[in-house]
Length: 470
Ligand SMILES: *[C@@H]1O[C@H](CO)[C@@H](O)[C@H](O)[C@H]1NC(C)=O
Ligand SMILES: *[C@@H]1O[C@H](CO)[C@@H](O)[C@H](O)[C@H]1NC(C)=O
Ligand SMILES: *[C@@H]1O[C@H](CO)[C@@H](O)[C@H](O)[C@H]1NC(C)=O
Ligand SMILES: *[C@@H]1O[C@H](CO)[C@@H](O)[C@H](O)[C@H]1NC(C)=O
Ligand SMILES: *[C@@H]1O[C@H](CO)[C@@H](O)[C@H](O)[C@H]1NC(C)=O
Image (cartoon, rainbow, N blue to C red; front, side):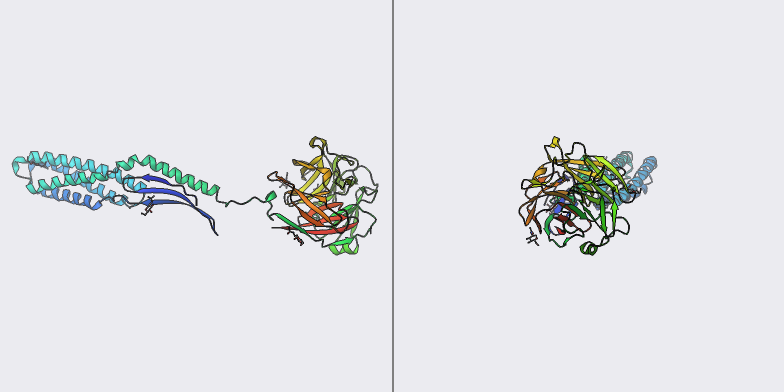
């Protein structure tokens, strides 16, 4: 429990402001303004007694019918009326608790004190004037004296002390305001941040494979990629794309579409969409690490450090320069000393959009990750320079704002060993999650935010793995 105490001691009360955080099932925080009215309460009744005594006095004086004192009597009468009204006001203000009430009460009492002083002055003048008239009885004289004494005793409650404390009360108010502001800011309970700010939680495991099948091409093409478009065209929500590197295990010039998962398993394509009639040629596909996003295929352009986008709708290609990115096997993915040919550039999709992984000499051949802003002409957005040497990696994918890298463990296992949190910038080399393999090599790995599956292309086979978050 964290408690902020602010105390202000006043003539009659102790006020405290504190912040209270309760830890438990329900995490709550509240500002409490506590009033300990341990002090003296203003004795309104006693003042009333003085007032009624004064009124009584006036009545008795007026009955004396003393001509010399008519003017003084008039004044006195007026003063007592005033006093009466002030006492009524005071009673209305004295609603018991509020500081403001206390403050006004103090001011009102001061006014009454002044009133009474003037009354006493008038009475004193009256007394002098009527001394020879035996007008004022001894009784009235005593009463007036008593009133004076009582008034002096009431001065104990002189709330000018509260007036002096007004500044402290303002400090108190500020503390209360700040407390409330703090409460708004820090209302969220402290949580251990999830990598990438991922709403799915931490990546806990990769299970499977569930799908494991050779494609329609048989074992003709060992290199390729497949997956689902996270933002598919209307009517193609259940479609799967497949790009096989049909020339030299390096190049591709068309995309094959399947209208369902079972269609790809039984090998019945929906259509082939041609990027170019030649293979390879300018802006055709080079390398297996391609991805489909918003009905456009993103890939490494043929023989150029460039990211290509093939628009499925318009059937046109636009390009984005990958400045300084290694290409043509300069910084490929590798395993056990061998490398996957022409895997310099890897395109990934996740919940937030599109990403591209490459390496630059400027970053010593280490992995560089860039967000791809797909609006209009695709451009590179935020970029992270990692300490991960690209040649020590067999594949990468991005899931929920975190870059993951795999390495070859053995014939049966690939391991996700590395992660880069794009929110905190934190790199980890101890992720230690295994991916069970059916064949030796994984040529490409794509994460689909639609179903949280990894789509792997492995030695002519297509496989899916379930990514488990929590
Ligand atoms: C108010 O009074 C209660 C009970 O007497 C006491 O426990 C508490 O500490 C007091 N608070 C302040 C601010 O003095
Ligand atoms: C009025 O005058 C008498 C005698 O002069 C004095 O004893 C008394 O205290 C006076 N009363 C007041 C209220 O001043
Ligand atoms: C991951 O899943 C596999 C297969 O379901 C299981 O054997 C393994 O223990 C899991 N690993 C972790 C870290 O939960
Ligand atoms: C693809 O082309 C269509 C038709 O010209 C256009 O509406 C769409 O915005 C393009 N997509 C991208 C990602 O540029
Ligand atoms: C892309 O376009 C969409 C819709 O026009 C817009 O909401 C979004 O902010 C744009 N993103 C960028 C990075 O410009």
